[in-house]
Image (spheres, rainbow, N blue to C red):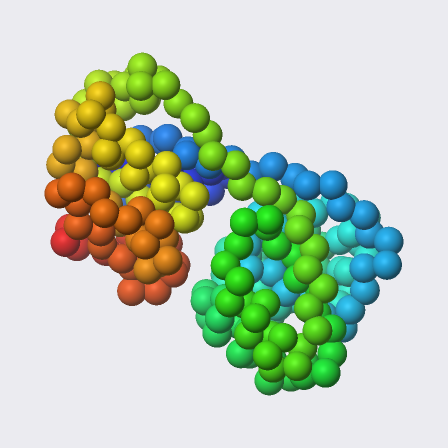
Length: 235
């Protein structure tokens, strides 16, 4: 099965290796790219740190990490926790893999305190809203942005070797919107006519929207292993 990997690097290469281990033929076509935003460390303080994306710590400047590294760090899941430890955080708590559940965990112990939230410019608002509702002050620090990548029809055909794609994996709402345009393009119809679409979450599936003949399959939880498990099941 030829599987399109739409996530940005460095995650795309990791997903490619995992797909190869499972017997799939991965095709890398990142539809988005993450870029660092200018951030200063001055006056950024709090009682703890929260991270819901590994990219947030990968793109954070070293002086900001140094300022915050001794604070307790709450990471949304395993990959993000690994990235936080690699960046230099000394005390990292690994969450359940879901941002809203992580907010509930944090709120239980930090009501009335301030958390520094390292995040991207494009993000789901429920995490911050949940914390604020629970009485946790949130100091949001945007360390990166996610931008869409634009490919010509010829470049798409070259990436796909002119052959149809059996499945496409979607990891973000922005990539879902871009994939929707590709799947609905008359010029690329032969490449995506029979492509099955697999989304990491309901929110991402909603961003893909309705494309003729496309039934979107959604992972049981927003974790890559759940997405690959769904892919392996086929339907």
